[in-house]
Image 1 (spheres, protein in one colour):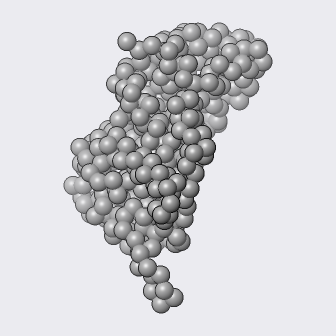
Image 2 (cartoon, protein in one colour):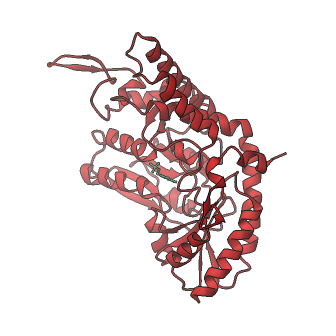
Image 3 (tube, helix red, strand yellow):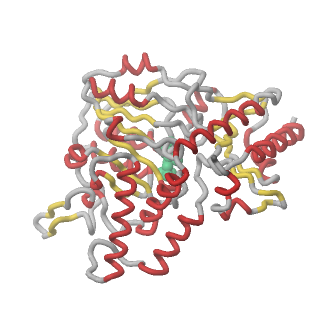
Length: 404
Ligand SMILES: *Cc1c(COP(=O)(O)O)cnc(C)c1O
């Protein structure tokens, strides 16, 4: 049994009121809310054992190091990663992608090709464009269909011996499309190309088995899955990470330093220069523990019900058009109503305490594809309810009436 009333008690923020209305938080694709269990872990760290890790002989440093490394092990286990040192702590998805992009800069040459998809987040477009400018490599794009799925036949045509890297999001943050990642990985490997999956939008909903996928790199942010902001991870196969140059120089990432020559530390420290977000890393592990205690299968099943319920309600609203109707999608609905500007609807909903996102959702190419300035995006999480969707429908109908 999935007891959402019981689960909601874990999230203090969900009892907030906005303008006298109960908060309805439907912006989970931008960031998720944090349960008390995770907040407690952060408070406990700063209250009891705040210390720098890895270097100290004293008790607090040892406790902090142990908690931080335990969190790494939790992440490793969650994603079925072979070794803990294949988990690199970063500040989030964006930094993880930039780390890899910068790592490939010395080895790419003119005429090499990189493939991305038409439905990427800007953080999985811009670093690769910058890399292409620097190296002379060429960026190719897998186009998308009206339905919001990738044109897999064209992907096959784009692949060749020149392809070095393929970058695709596991789930689109703007449309909710779950991409056929296994097929993407297998086909790329057929040409010796490496694959990076942006898992930021997938990981709150789908527990990915990275060894089974045989993916080369996988990245995500803790704040999308009930953890804090400013911390995330990069998974990379150790054979590949060992070949990449370090990303940043500094403390923690060296084996020895002299003015003549510095040798680098082994994984994962080679990529973890400086004092990390220690409390954040520990809380990332706690967030995964929290979600695993509920169970990802239960979460996915419940969110699918929310999505079906909301989709059914919204499609009954006149002139409402949903963007992204892939057969496999997570609980995200991107839509517009007639010619009303998404921002206007979003503002009125906000007055009623309903939090949705409006705009291009950091995925402008998708909006260009549909020839629209943006959409309203309602994205659901396992702590949302059918009653909240009812409130959303009522609010939306009111807003549309006011604006028409
Ligand atoms: C949120 C998100 C990102 C960016 O994550 P940050 O935490 O801002 O670095 C990248 N890609 C997708 C698909 C996302 O949903």
